[in-house]
Length: 321
Image 1 (cartoon, one colour):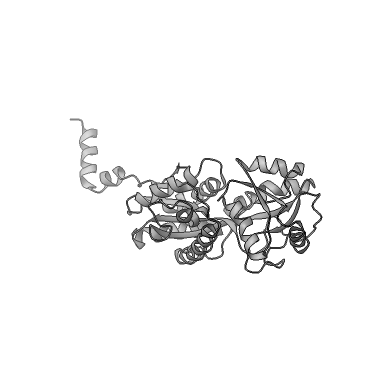
Image 2 (cartoon, rainbow, N blue to C red):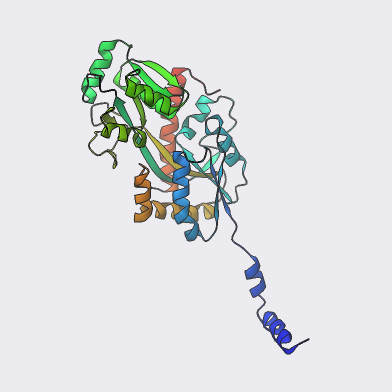
C-alpha cells in the first residue's frame, strides 16, 4: 500500500461522518399536477418550484397526471404516502370533483392536507361587439330582454368557466342558452364570429381579443379587479352581489401528513409568491397571488368553495361521468 493511499484511508477513518453525508442525497419531492403540460396549473406549478426547490434544498419533480376532470391526479395524491414526499398543485376544479363525479372515492377536504393557497386567475365576462351592452347592468338588462335566447359559448359542461357563467345566472337571476364546445378555442372562434353572444373565460385568452376590438370585456369574475385588466370592474363591484369566481390554485398533501413535513413546504410556497421576480412571472401568465398563503387560509377558502360549487353543481343536475 502506498503512503498516499494509507494517508487517504486514514483521513476517511478520522472523519466517520463524511461518507454518510456524501451518500445521502436530498429526497425528491413529487409534485402532482392533475392536468396536462402547458395548462395554467402546470405553468403555475413550474414557476413556483423554481423558487421553492433551492429554498427546500431538495429537487421537486412535476408529474402531470391529467384526465377525468383532474380526478386521476387527485386520486394519486390522495393515495400517496403521507410522509412529506408528495404534494399536489390543485385547481378550483378540486372543489367540485365530488359533486361532479359521484363515484369518486375521495373527499376534497377530508382526503387532503392543506399546504398553501397560492394563485388565482380571473375569468372575463366578454361579449361579441354586436351585443348592445357596454357594461354589466346593460348586459343583464339585455339578457332579460332575450328571454333565454342569448347564447353562452363554453368549453365543456361542468368546466369552471361554465360553472362561473351558471353562478352569474343564479346570482343575477338571468337566463341564457348554453352552447358547449369540445375546446375553448372553438368557442372563442364562434364568439368573435358572432355565432355565440358571450363567454366567461380566461383573461389571458380574451385580453388580446379585447385589444383588437374583436370582443368587448365587461367585467372580471374575481371579487377584486385584475392586475392584467385593471380597467374592468369586478362583477361584484358592477352590481352582482356576492359574485366571486376564479381559476385558483392551492397546494395539498395527502391526508394525515405531519405538520413538521408540511410547514417547510408551506413557507417555501409563501416565499415564492412574495418574491418579486416570481410574482412578475406569474403576472405575465395572467395570475395574481393571494395575500394569505397559509395552510389555514387554504383550509378556510376550500370549505367556502366546496360548499358554493357543490351546491351549484347539484342544482344543475349535471355530472362529469
